[in-house]
Image (cartoon, rainbow, N blue to C red; front, side, top):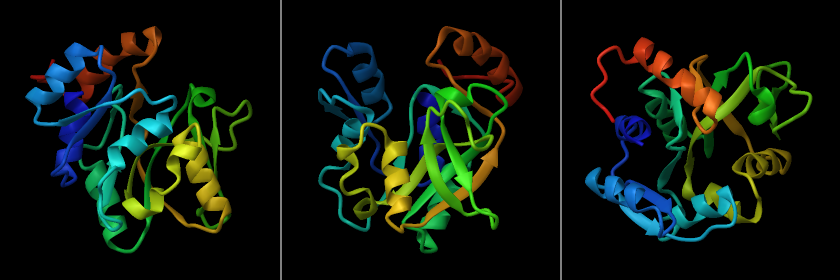
Length: 200
Protein backbone atom coordinates (compact mmCIF):
# COMPACT_ATOMS: atom_id res chain seq x y z
CA UNK A 1 0.00 0.00 0.00
CA UNK A 2 2.82 2.40 0.89
CA UNK A 3 4.28 2.00 -2.59
CA UNK A 4 1.20 3.27 -4.46
CA UNK A 5 0.53 5.96 -1.83
CA UNK A 6 4.04 7.36 -2.31
CA UNK A 7 3.43 7.57 -6.05
CA UNK A 8 0.04 9.23 -5.63
CA UNK A 9 1.49 11.82 -3.29
CA UNK A 10 4.33 12.46 -5.73
CA UNK A 11 1.58 13.16 -8.27
CA UNK A 12 0.05 15.83 -6.05
CA UNK A 13 -2.62 13.81 -4.22
CA UNK A 14 -4.01 15.79 -1.26
CA UNK A 15 -7.09 13.69 -0.46
CA UNK A 16 -6.14 10.03 -0.23
CA UNK A 17 -9.11 7.65 -0.18
CA UNK A 18 -9.09 3.91 0.35
CA UNK A 19 -12.17 1.78 -0.22
CA UNK A 20 -12.26 -1.51 1.66
CA UNK A 21 -14.51 -3.92 3.53
CA UNK A 22 -15.26 -3.72 7.24
CA UNK A 23 -13.48 -7.00 8.04
CA UNK A 24 -10.12 -5.74 6.67
CA UNK A 25 -8.93 -4.48 10.06
CA UNK A 26 -5.24 -4.49 9.14
CA UNK A 27 -5.86 -2.56 5.92
CA UNK A 28 -8.01 0.02 7.73
CA UNK A 29 -5.44 0.50 10.49
CA UNK A 30 -2.54 0.95 8.09
CA UNK A 31 -4.48 3.28 5.80
CA UNK A 32 -5.33 5.47 8.77
CA UNK A 33 -1.64 5.52 9.75
CA UNK A 34 -0.92 6.84 6.25
CA UNK A 35 -3.49 9.61 6.66
CA UNK A 36 -6.03 8.16 4.26
CA UNK A 37 -9.77 8.55 4.50
CA UNK A 38 -11.12 4.99 4.80
CA UNK A 39 -14.43 4.35 3.06
CA UNK A 40 -16.12 1.15 4.20
CA UNK A 41 -18.24 -0.41 1.48
CA UNK A 42 -19.29 -3.71 -0.05
CA UNK A 43 -18.79 -3.07 -3.77
CA UNK A 44 -19.64 -5.96 -6.08
CA UNK A 45 -17.07 -4.95 -8.70
CA UNK A 46 -13.79 -3.10 -9.02
CA UNK A 47 -15.57 -0.26 -10.82
CA UNK A 48 -18.09 0.09 -8.00
CA UNK A 49 -15.18 0.32 -5.56
CA UNK A 50 -13.62 3.19 -7.51
CA UNK A 51 -17.02 4.89 -7.79
CA UNK A 52 -17.35 4.89 -3.99
CA UNK A 53 -14.10 6.83 -3.81
CA UNK A 54 -15.43 9.45 -6.26
CA UNK A 55 -18.40 10.46 -4.12
CA UNK A 56 -18.59 14.13 -3.21
CA UNK A 57 -15.95 15.32 -5.68
CA UNK A 58 -16.40 18.37 -7.88
CA UNK A 59 -16.71 17.64 -11.63
CA UNK A 60 -13.33 19.16 -12.49
CA UNK A 61 -11.40 17.61 -9.61
CA UNK A 62 -8.51 15.44 -10.81
CA UNK A 63 -8.75 11.84 -9.63
CA UNK A 64 -5.90 9.32 -9.45
CA UNK A 65 -6.82 5.65 -9.79
CA UNK A 66 -4.60 2.77 -8.74
CA UNK A 67 -4.29 -0.53 -6.90
CA UNK A 68 -2.34 -1.27 -3.71
CA UNK A 69 -1.20 -4.65 -5.04
CA UNK A 70 0.87 -3.32 -7.95
CA UNK A 71 4.52 -2.32 -8.20
CA UNK A 72 5.67 -0.12 -11.04
CA UNK A 73 8.06 2.58 -12.19
CA UNK A 74 8.68 5.48 -12.56
CA UNK A 75 8.02 7.13 -9.20
CA UNK A 76 6.70 10.26 -10.97
CA UNK A 77 4.22 8.34 -13.13
CA UNK A 78 1.14 10.01 -11.66
CA UNK A 79 2.77 13.43 -12.05
CA UNK A 80 3.04 12.76 -15.79
CA UNK A 81 -0.63 11.76 -15.95
CA UNK A 82 -1.75 14.81 -13.97
CA UNK A 83 0.26 17.04 -16.31
CA UNK A 84 -1.61 15.49 -19.26
CA UNK A 85 -4.99 16.11 -17.62
CA UNK A 86 -4.07 19.68 -16.69
CA UNK A 87 -3.10 20.16 -20.34
CA UNK A 88 -6.58 19.18 -21.50
CA UNK A 89 -6.94 15.39 -21.48
CA UNK A 90 -10.08 14.20 -19.69
CA UNK A 91 -8.58 10.77 -18.99
CA UNK A 92 -4.87 9.89 -19.04
CA UNK A 93 -3.76 6.27 -18.75
CA UNK A 94 -0.34 5.16 -17.54
CA UNK A 95 0.90 2.50 -19.99
CA UNK A 96 3.34 -0.31 -19.30
CA UNK A 97 4.92 -2.75 -21.73
CA UNK A 98 4.70 -6.38 -20.61
CA UNK A 99 6.34 -9.52 -21.89
CA UNK A 100 4.09 -11.95 -20.00
CA UNK A 101 0.72 -12.19 -18.23
CA UNK A 102 -1.00 -10.12 -20.91
CA UNK A 103 -4.04 -12.41 -20.72
CA UNK A 104 -4.53 -11.30 -17.08
CA UNK A 105 -4.34 -7.60 -17.92
CA UNK A 106 -6.17 -4.80 -19.72
CA UNK A 107 -4.36 -4.59 -23.05
CA UNK A 108 -4.37 -1.40 -25.11
CA UNK A 109 -4.83 -1.25 -28.88
CA UNK A 110 -3.53 1.63 -31.00
CA UNK A 111 -4.09 3.23 -34.38
CA UNK A 112 -1.27 3.91 -36.87
CA UNK A 113 -0.57 7.29 -35.26
CA UNK A 114 -0.22 5.68 -31.82
CA UNK A 115 -3.58 6.86 -30.49
CA UNK A 116 -5.55 4.53 -28.22
CA UNK A 117 -8.42 2.82 -30.04
CA UNK A 118 -9.60 0.44 -27.32
CA UNK A 119 -8.98 -1.44 -24.10
CA UNK A 120 -9.24 -5.24 -24.11
CA UNK A 121 -9.94 -6.76 -20.69
CA UNK A 122 -8.09 -10.05 -20.14
CA UNK A 123 -7.94 -10.86 -23.88
CA UNK A 124 -7.17 -14.35 -25.13
CA UNK A 125 -5.41 -12.78 -28.14
CA UNK A 126 -3.74 -9.55 -26.95
CA UNK A 127 -3.55 -6.88 -29.70
CA UNK A 128 -0.37 -5.31 -28.29
CA UNK A 129 2.18 -5.68 -25.50
CA UNK A 130 0.96 -2.55 -23.69
CA UNK A 131 -1.41 -2.45 -20.73
CA UNK A 132 -2.82 0.41 -18.71
CA UNK A 133 -1.96 0.24 -15.01
CA UNK A 134 -2.84 3.60 -13.45
CA UNK A 135 -4.91 6.59 -14.44
CA UNK A 136 -5.71 10.23 -13.83
CA UNK A 137 -8.96 11.85 -14.91
CA UNK A 138 -11.36 14.70 -14.33
CA UNK A 139 -14.08 13.39 -12.02
CA UNK A 140 -16.84 14.17 -14.52
CA UNK A 141 -15.17 11.96 -17.15
CA UNK A 142 -15.71 8.95 -14.86
CA UNK A 143 -19.48 9.40 -14.55
CA UNK A 144 -21.17 6.02 -14.96
CA UNK A 145 -18.03 4.06 -14.10
CA UNK A 146 -19.99 1.83 -11.71
CA UNK A 147 -22.12 0.50 -14.58
CA UNK A 148 -19.16 -1.46 -15.98
CA UNK A 149 -17.68 -4.45 -14.16
CA UNK A 150 -14.10 -3.42 -14.91
CA UNK A 151 -12.57 0.06 -15.23
CA UNK A 152 -10.91 -1.11 -18.45
CA UNK A 153 -14.34 -1.85 -19.91
CA UNK A 154 -15.45 1.67 -18.96
CA UNK A 155 -12.40 3.18 -20.67
CA UNK A 156 -13.08 1.07 -23.75
CA UNK A 157 -16.70 2.29 -23.86
CA UNK A 158 -15.51 5.87 -23.34
CA UNK A 159 -13.18 5.49 -26.30
CA UNK A 160 -15.85 3.93 -28.52
CA UNK A 161 -18.27 6.76 -27.67
CA UNK A 162 -15.78 9.17 -29.19
CA UNK A 163 -13.83 10.12 -26.08
CA UNK A 164 -10.07 10.46 -26.30
CA UNK A 165 -7.91 8.41 -23.98
CA UNK A 166 -4.51 10.01 -23.59
CA UNK A 167 -1.84 7.33 -23.11
CA UNK A 168 1.46 8.03 -21.36
CA UNK A 169 4.04 5.29 -21.90
CA UNK A 170 5.69 5.02 -18.51
CA UNK A 171 7.96 1.95 -18.47
CA UNK A 172 8.30 -1.81 -18.79
CA UNK A 173 8.41 -2.21 -14.99
CA UNK A 174 5.03 -3.48 -13.81
CA UNK A 175 4.08 -6.27 -11.41
CA UNK A 176 0.66 -7.27 -10.13
CA UNK A 177 1.40 -9.07 -6.87
CA UNK A 178 -2.09 -10.50 -6.57
CA UNK A 179 -0.94 -14.05 -7.34
CA UNK A 180 1.58 -16.30 -5.56
CA UNK A 181 4.03 -16.50 -8.51
CA UNK A 182 4.10 -12.73 -8.98
CA UNK A 183 4.37 -12.12 -5.24
CA UNK A 184 7.44 -14.35 -5.26
CA UNK A 185 9.00 -12.05 -7.89
CA UNK A 186 8.23 -8.89 -5.89
CA UNK A 187 11.27 -9.04 -3.62
CA UNK A 188 13.61 -9.36 -6.58
CA UNK A 189 11.96 -6.43 -8.36
CA UNK A 190 12.04 -4.24 -5.26
CA UNK A 191 15.70 -5.03 -4.73
CA UNK A 192 16.39 -3.57 -8.18
CA UNK A 193 14.15 -0.49 -8.09
CA UNK A 194 14.39 0.25 -4.34
CA UNK A 195 17.79 -1.04 -3.18
CA UNK A 196 17.35 0.40 0.33
CA UNK A 197 13.70 -0.35 1.16
CA UNK A 198 12.24 1.23 4.28
CA UNK A 199 8.64 0.21 3.68
CA UNK A 200 6.76 -2.76 5.05
